[in-house]
Image (cartoon, rainbow, N blue to C red; front, side, top):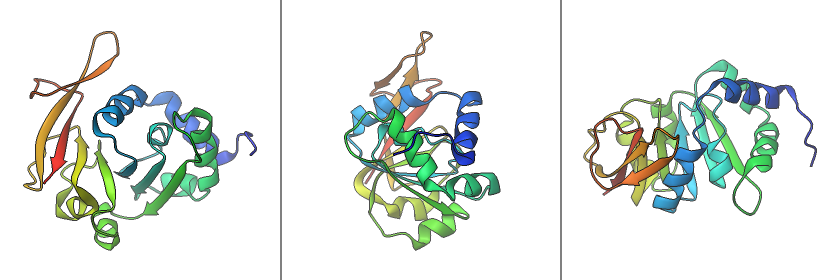
Length: 178
């Protein structure tokens, strides 16, 4: 497989050069949840979940994101260079408003939903997550389908850790789907 940078690969790497590095966050969440299949609405060009999880479905409306993901081979090559698991990365991209896209997806098919920029994800998102599955959110979650499980904290040294109690300013929160 070629490791040559394509225009799409450069789009992803240019974004990653300016975005916050979430690989540590994803690593502690993966260890805590055991998730393998991830759904990521409003993903933008953040392909780093595919460094941690072998099967990620990205959803976004942004034209730049849709153009970059039009060649999923570029995203797969980038993930393959950084992955921490065995096997080939499986990456899918779905363009469109996430609530509409979620309504068309199979129910109870993903282990983890990343809601880092999506705001309240709603009922359509909950139906996509397996019972007992997970939601990682940076904002509040008022959906009765999910119950609080843990806070993910970021230390001053840049290390993430999961704690079982609600914290004052967590980097993110983990919720379980009931």
